[in-house]
Amino acid sequence: MTACDKWLSQFYGKRPYEEYSLLDRAARTLLGNLLVPPEGKALPWAPWRGITPSVMGFRGVWNWDSAFHAVGVSRWDAELAREQILMFLERQKPSGLLPDVVFEDGRVVDTFGKPPVMPWAAMIVDRRENNDAFLQAIYPKFVLYESHWRKNRGGDEHGLFNYNADHESPETRLTDAKYESGWDNSVRWDGGIYEVWPVDLNCFMVMLYQALAYMADRLKLPRDAGRWENAGVELSRRIETRLWDDAAGTYLDFDFGKGTFVDALSPASFMPLYVGVASKARAGAMARLAASPEKFNPGWPSIAYDNQHFDPKGYWRGRTWLNVAYFALKGLKDYGFDDIADAGRDTLLSWVRNTPAYIHENYHPLTGAPLGAGQFSWSAVFTLEFLLNWTPGRSL
Figure 1 (tube, rainbow, N blue to C red):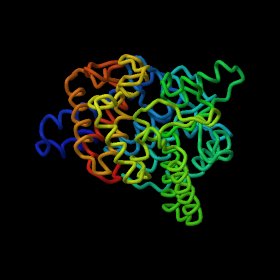
Figure 2: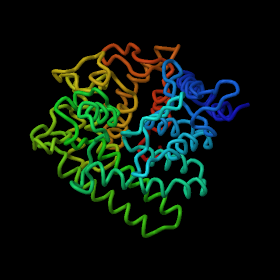
Figure 3: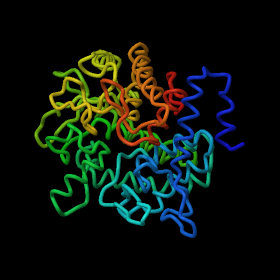
Figure 4: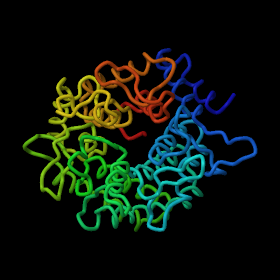
């Protein structure tokens, strides 16, 4: 019996079969995307074992995908989870930046990174199975990583963070910066990206500070822990002060170059609920938007239904992605808005259930039809989290 089989056995007969079936499919999707080297050859990230987004079209390992993969497989194989993190930290640049992707053929894309979720993922992995040697190895690298974001992505200058890329060509730099966001061609970036403070990025940085504080506490570094806790609290205050649009009644990205909010309501606007920094009144306003069939109910598109640029088949311009939908819905659930949160969860899981061949990259936000690559790893991860980490709290 494999570690995965043993883990799954605890749910067999104790969960409704339709839930157990999804757990089984999600776990095996992740393991099915473990890249196997050609006979007699080693993959570029050896000796680590890398999980690709999908063997159906992706031949490499990607940054924030790998962080999410670590969260998923840590439920039954902590060592494999740690390897998803170590293989990127091994290629950290002197600036602190972590590469976007390492391809199977050895090419590395490192003129930009991805959203800073790797420290949060490492914290989750260690919570599920403590490993002091792992923390000792990764902590100084994540301290350097924080320095990169602060020095090179706006934190020191503005106190809030933005995406960017290290490239001389203006056209390539713009494309790369959008890729660094992970939201590629999103409506959110139609008016520019360098001078935008994205709501989700700044919440991911709060999660980064929480993770660094956790690591410092585990390593018995109380002064460091206090420093990171204070940084997270201060950034949370800035999010509440500067990324809430009173006129629209919602959190929105802010273009500090133009001095205006970005008119692009998306699941990213709900991230302050996930990290727990939203006031009850503001969370209530967000819940009302969430319940609206003109905005997100029932399919949680990557831009609100009533946005003039909404495209149900557009990659990040309408399609439903389980990762960002999970963060939004879990935030609503944690604030007690059970009806809308549960309804969204049930809808998305029904779409996964309706495509038994594969768990897909994304879904049509009106019909639930599968879109993108089949056998997609992070969709599998967040299927697991919708099922196993749903009740209020921070167990993930």
